[in-house]
Amino acid sequence: MVVIRLRRGGMKKKPFYRIVAVDSRKKRDGAVIEILGYYDPKTEPPTIKVEMEKYNSWIEKGAKVSETVKNLVKKVG
Image 1 (cartoon, rainbow, N blue to C red):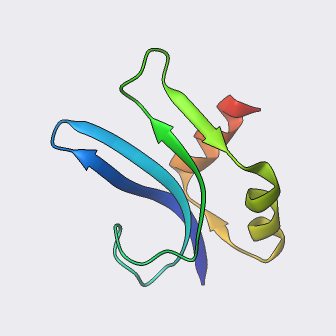
Image 2: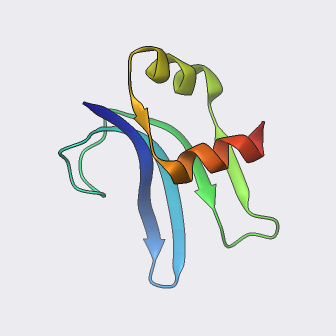
């Protein structure tokens, strides 16, 4: 099953997250199928970029979305 969730990057105490489509059995930072956007919580205000065409495409294919990503997408619009 495919899940849309956050993948952590960046350095210690400077997190940066990519919004990715990934197999649910993979590790949090494991191999991804497709990168859908990013989230940078350290900027003021926090930066959120989501490619809505790709995001909606994965939802149509039956991908589950994590609660955190759902909340971020709501903020984007």
